[in-house]
Amino acid sequence: MTTQNMQVSQDDLKKIEQRARVKRVTGKSLTYFFLTVWGLLVLFPFYWMLLTSVKSYSSYNAEYTPKFWTAAPTLANYRAAFTTVPLARYFLNTLIFTVATTLIMLIVVTLAAFAFSRLEFKGKNLVFTLFLALMMIPNELVIITNFVTITNWGMRNTFWGLILPSVTSVFYIYLLKENFAQIPEELYKAAKVDGCSDFRYLTKVMIPISAPTLVTVIILKVIECWNSYVWPRLITDDPNYYLVSNGIQIILFLIFHKKIMAGVSRGGTKG
Image 1 (cartoon, rainbow, N blue to C red):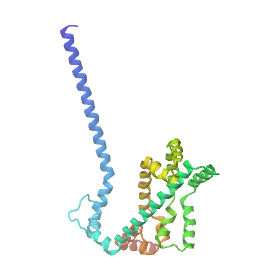
Image 2 (image 1 turned 30 degrees about the vertical axis):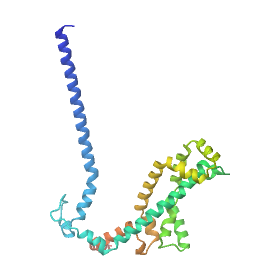
Image 3 (image 1 turned 60 degrees about the vertical axis):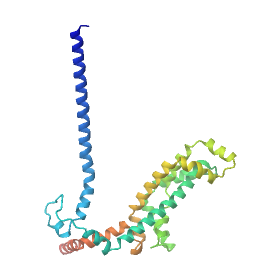
Image 4 (image 1 turned 45 degrees about the horizontal axis):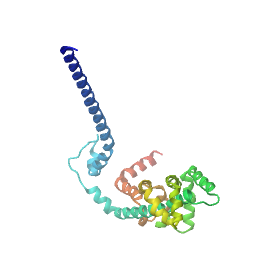
């Protein structure tokens, strides 16, 4: 190969590397651009929520077209939220409801999952099949039964009335049961030979191994409890047991009651 050919080959390699570098930079730039745009779209509702919360009622009504900033932010809306209604109490109630429900549910589903995955008893497969069948029942049907039961037990307007219907979950039992089943059974047999009790084996071996799944269950349950609305609204009519989800409805009515009543009046007049 001549010196000229070698020079041409090196030039071609440099051009190829340069084109590849340009493609990589262009690809990364486009990726970051679209990710940035998508991130802004996702974060915009939160920005709008915070922006609206620091606008006064008069300035908000004066905007014929929405403005994406405010020249006179105010915290009056936050003061009204905590003084007009006992929002701090609602937060405390929600915290108690969430923590208690999650802890009790965690104990119940963990013991149930251990029983279905490791213990042998008559009719285990049938019972587990019936458990799975319960997942096909809509929650709306269960709410009616729970409401009648809690009312008959005299637990309306109590924390126990809020908590008890939510202390178990067929889905979480199934999830943990499948996770426990992946742990080698030889560990369980070896522990039994060493005289280890079932409860000790569960707490010392199975729970540490399944910690990631348990954390996932806890997170999902906390989110579910914190966002719960239908059941707390149905079973409580005492403000001392309202949750945040119920209190927000009251706050919205107090803030916009003039508009709401005006709309009702117009509807009644036209009717």
